[in-house]
Length: 89
Image (cartoon, rainbow, N blue to C red; front, side, top):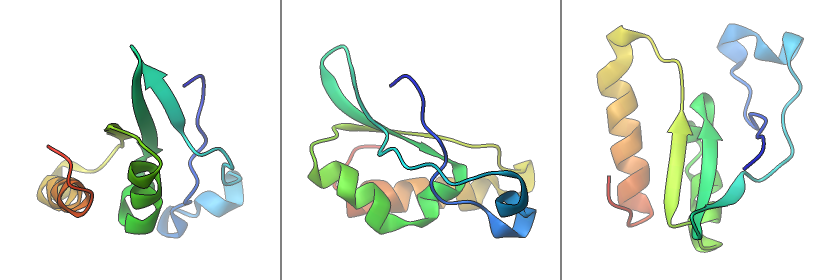
C-alpha cells in the first residue's frame, strides 16, 4: 500500500475541520499476502473492516495514536474486530 487516507474522521477531535476523509479502500499485498490497512478511528466501524475481510484481506493492520489511559479499550476493539472477522489476533 503506497498510501491510505483515514476514511472515518474523529469529530471529537474536530478532524473534519482540518482533514478531508479518504476515499481509498486500503487494500494491498505484502509479500503476496492480501492485506488491508486502517487508521485509528476506522476500528470503530465493524462493517468497514468486515468489507475488507470479505474481499480477501488475510491480514488487517490498524495504526493509531490512542492515549495510554485507554489502552484496554483499544485492545478490546482490536480483539472484537478479530473475532467478528474470524481473524487471529
